[in-house]
Image (cartoon, rainbow, N blue to C red; front, side, top):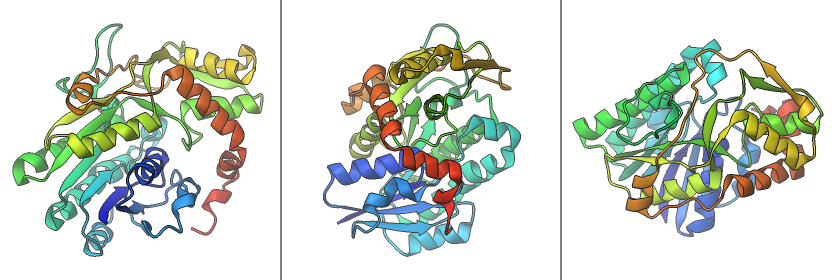
Length: 330
């Protein structure tokens, strides 16, 4: 049985990826290493918790000894590195933790993986490392890195560390950079679940600035399929952009969710814009499509409808987060 390591597997994308891999590959075992910070939720992987194909190891990647111990206990064929602090607003008010987790934590993982001889490492990054775009154009893999928030700067730093390990040590790393993900199990502080939860409670929905900031949206399961394709067919040392070509303004996303829920637009409340708010992100995923044969299955319309329905049907999941009960026993 092939053994894989997933870091940050209690989070949104990591937990969806674990589910995707178990559903599509019968001969794998996954070790999930997660620090169980506020965004790490064991409920996300509960269905796998008793499987003999799954193991959870509580691991703080900012602790070098914990990371070394993780690699001493198993020999992994591949590592998928999702673990990161990822909320831009939190990075503005508390940037140090982002540097510790995203930069120092990645360094510890690269050191341990290098020593252990992992055959392939997929380093999950973000399109935010490229900065912002005007009204036209797209990010490609050759776009210079110009991060504009402490979050994106910390991710760009981790990308550069990963790149250096490929070229200096021959560590078999591939970097992926994705556009805005959405879907089941996304922590309620993010835009789409925030809209859904507040709308279900008939509460005001805050929208930064004029609401015309543009994002390219990608359904999380499509992202997971792309990462699997990168693992199977990607070239070591390469970067692969993963995007849905589904650009929408933030205000359009809010209106779409309200329409799906049958809620009035009077709930929309415009608030002061956040510091350093990038105007537009848009990814060109042509390389990933052409070289790896990946294409997203969901349009924003179908994916958003599924996402909204999931939050409606899984109210207990996000109510446990709101009450804090999902953290009991840690």
